[in-house]
Length: 216
Image (cartoon, rainbow, N blue to C red; front, top):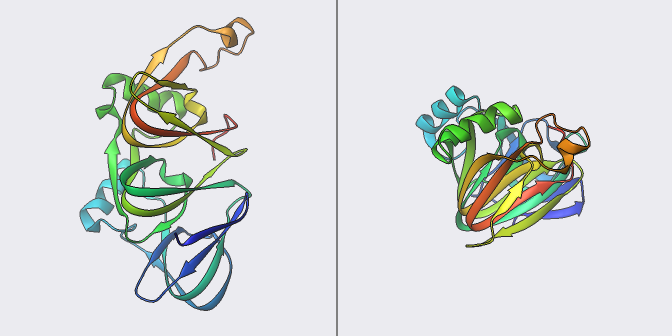
């Protein structure tokens, strides 16, 4: 794993010759060694077609390629950072939440409507996020940003998880999602500005939830 957590809002990445990292532009705080930072017009592993898909989807967060030999400290906006390790599976995450990730991971874009049909599209409207989500697949580490820290909730068959759409950060595994409506205690106490919607996740994997309803 190339990332070491310094504290809840900073990580350190080990950069070795022949291997790349990608990070959000402006996220470098300090570095040691012979390290280069290059604007990445293709947006990571996945090639030109993947880049065009993300541009059309509005998921083309500016990235930079990090190469060389040394260590780099990353952080951005004082946001909390969560390091997620992938072992061949796929992570689904909003592009603006990506802080840094292994260059070996394959990046793409998924239309959220394909997971939940029309309700997937409604999710985009309710959360203020796009209908498309960035995907990262393979073996490697990903550092994502969130407000107030992150908790990982396991998802298994018969044990679905319901998440406030505003608190959703990312998920991985063989997981299906759909938006459902529910009238609960929040509506009864006057907090009905969108909380009547719940993101229901089922299958086998995990979902990451932040301790806030605030967007980045």
